Image 1: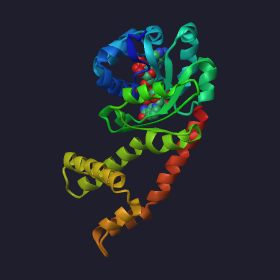
Image 2: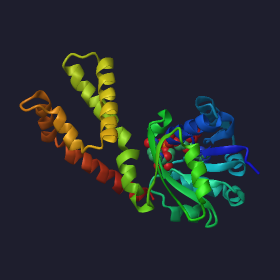
Image 3: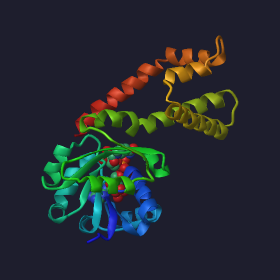
Image 4: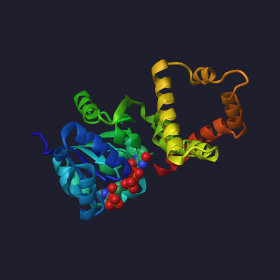
Length: 267
Ligand SMILES: NC(=O)c1ccc[n+]([C@@H]2O[C@H](COP(=O)([O-])OP(=O)(O)OC[C@H]3O[C@@H](n4cnc5c(N)ncnc54)[C@H](OP(=O)(O)O)[C@@H]3O)[C@@H](O)[C@H]2O)c1
């Protein structure tokens, strides 16, 4: 029999909330339930996201897909408190917990459970995110298809072998923070040179959006696209040289290394 909710979220903060928004766009807010740490917090999240507030227990009994959106450090305590309800749940569990493997999830939730491990990013809230996913062998192709449909308003989806999820997460899950730093820093440079702050920020953000679209649509190597912007002896190559003096590329690589390292500790 069809469940009351197509998707239920245990934890609907920055990331769970973004995915709840995407799910509600697909199936309607009355078919998406959210639970936070208290009833009041759940009501507030439900109002903010246009979904329905529920208890974690009702989410486990009444949802087809049960999303786990709590912090990795909290999951053991949360699962412990819901042991009997998890045991009885027929839901397909969808974990967005950074660094927590399918093997560990099966130990926590039960070896008989259908489990999807996903890595999303917060731009899913505006339909421009990315979700990579790996499922255990109990999840059927039809269920994966239903999951992709449920999340279709979040952005792009990509099946990925589980051992690559931590590296992917360090690039695009954490990546929005790196991009926001760049927007802020470029806007600072604009302001330093006389641009009003709001304009500088809008121009920097629009530039990142368009440049990303160029990489995705043209299929060209980013280095070739960079060369197209740099005229000989021009101002852009002067800017590129300044970024290289500041160690821009090695700082980006080190950011991904550091995030992978930290993610391993979370699991
Ligand atoms: N943020 C990202 O960009 C990002 C990207 C990829 C993956 N993730 C993963 O997403 C997960 C959530 O991260 P986040 O950044 O969204 O954290 P967050 O904003 O702090 O949200 C955590 C959520 O968990 C809820 N919660 C805490 N204790 C609970 C309980 N006992 N029962 C039910 N809900 C409870 C919180 O409710 P209250 O509001 O009431 O405290 C809140 O809604 C993490 O596992 C993280 O690894 C995050």
